[in-house]
Amino acid sequence: MNTRLLASTLIAALFIAGNGLTEELLKSGPPVGERNNRGAFFPNLVTGPGAGERRCPV
Image (cartoon, rainbow, N blue to C red; front, side, top):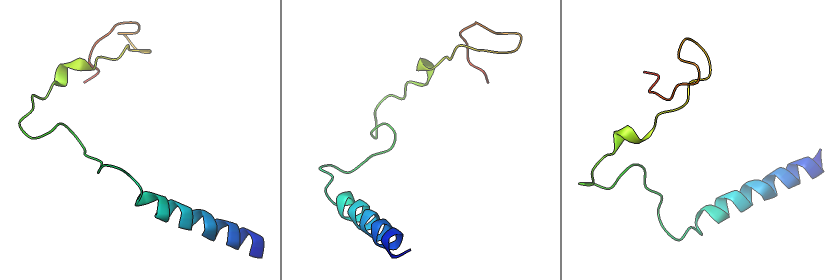
């Protein structure tokens, strides 16, 4: 039990310490003012009446 606790504490400490070592901040989404290209993702449908077709499922 002590070995598991020590190992999990060490792993948690490494994750927390490693979080501060990133070179740049992570950003979500496109930058402000940049064009948002929403037409780039059309998956191939696998099941249903449109199976094998490449189109938007929505």
